[in-house]
Image: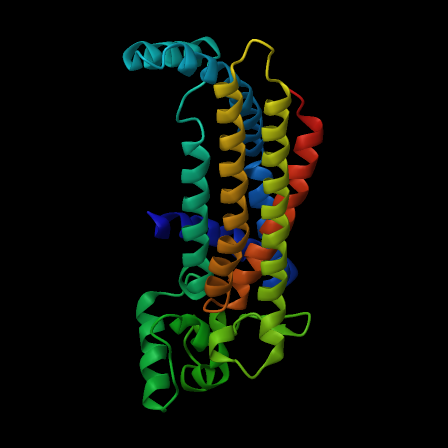
Length: 293
């Protein structure tokens, strides 16, 4: 399934590459287009988040009122979702789309000759065999990235092959080689630029989310009505502490995961993640101001 979508995305990336003749610029344009296509989903997600926050107070009232009757409590909660025309699983679609997109684009950037340049697999296997016979190191994880680097040798051996010119992808972008993998080029300081920028953008994105969640939680506390008992107020305080502690853990865990991924993937993939993070931050800030209900 991921390969199917990677193939579709490949047509778009190939079109952009043919227009600008630069892999890095085409990835940036590709990221912007995908973000615009998914904008309606992002708007829906933002509205769902706001509405879900409002429902939390009503749900707490139901949970407190029927805490000794779980069956009645679940029934009232489901009725609340129906009345507000919301689904308990409304956030699942967004998560599924994001995961599908992440893995499909990973396949695309990992194998640009297959999904973007549409080079037949038999040709790719033939190029790999030729380079291995010459003693060249071809990675099992990113063989097509290595073939792009070895274009001159492949061209010399396959001058009459109509597909060989498709191996010649221009991977240079602002002085950076997007075919490089940081883990394999530790002595080259340039391979750290995009991953570090990606990590910084991840910190900013998570920090914005954390601040927003904390503000929502504090807003809930301020809305405590006079009739609430001390037990309910304490539950609110405990919940807020739990959320804040979880967010602090996320602020450290997610960038650590980002580091491990960004340093073992081609820089082209890290560039996509970086631009996507920047666009996501801008989108979140704008939608938070625009969407009021």
